Amino acid sequence: MKGRSGKRKGAGHNEPQKFQEPLRPKHSINHKKKTHRQKNNANQSSASSKPPKSSSSNSSSFLDKIRARLAGGHFRMINEKLYTCSGREALDYFKEDPQFFDMYHTGYQEQMLHWPEQPINIIIKWLKDHSSSLILADFGCGDAHLAKNVKNKVFSFDLVSKDPSVIACDMSNVPLGPSSVDVAVFCLSLMGTNYASYLEEAYRVLKPSGWLLIAEVKSRFDPNNGGADPNRFSKAVCELGFTSELKDFSNKMFVLLYFKKKEKQSSKGREIEWPELKPCIYKRR
Image (cartoon, rainbow, N blue to C red; front, side):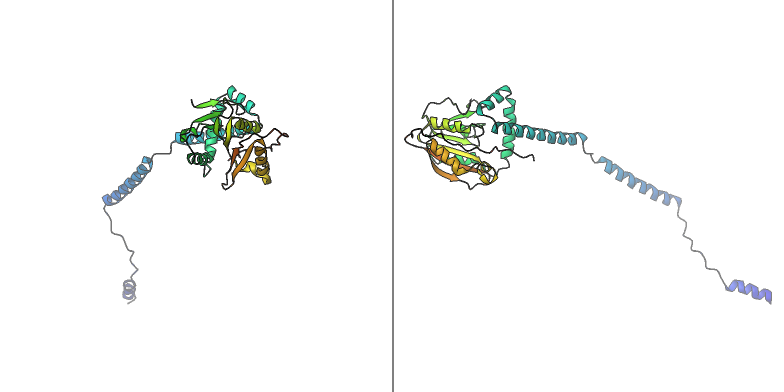
């Protein structure tokens, strides 16, 4: 009996069977591995097919930045020199190495790109509103932009001539006869320590009732920040033999001053007290 009950005991309590995954053919497993490897290879191939960033282009960009910084440094150095020396010294400076003039004007044009409005364009518009028969003298003309944009006859003067129409000379001694022009223009060009002699030369070559147009950086006429008093400057110009016709301070970057030569030359009185004009020194960007 014991023996039978033992058999029944063993038969009645079956152990839970382990689930066995059906066997897969070997070729199915290998196929999956192969497909996975192919995908990886394809991804790697795709990644490697993207052109890497050229080291030469990075190097070129870096060199361009260095050149721009060096050019900016040269411009600031030359600009400061022009504001703190006489016109004769500036003329000799550029005669010694004319490439400095190119460096200066390249930097100057770069600075002008940051100005929302150019004073020379306002002067051009003023001239176009007047007779094209007026004869002009452009003191510190640069690339003769004024002469190229008006119908008037223009005598263009600067320290160095980079254009056949430009006459290289000292602004205090231009090759024109007395009372020979109708309009004298100084657009951001009252730079030398002897700037008063430039205005005296403009007075000499202007006809009676001729116009003197001056555009200058606004900070140079801001007495609250070391600039000259604009009223004191105008007073000095008037004592030279002009009448003040208009002062335009509406632009945030520059001022425009319009003077007219008196019909009759006043007798020479006491010496004119010219205010010192603050040098326009550009900050490092």
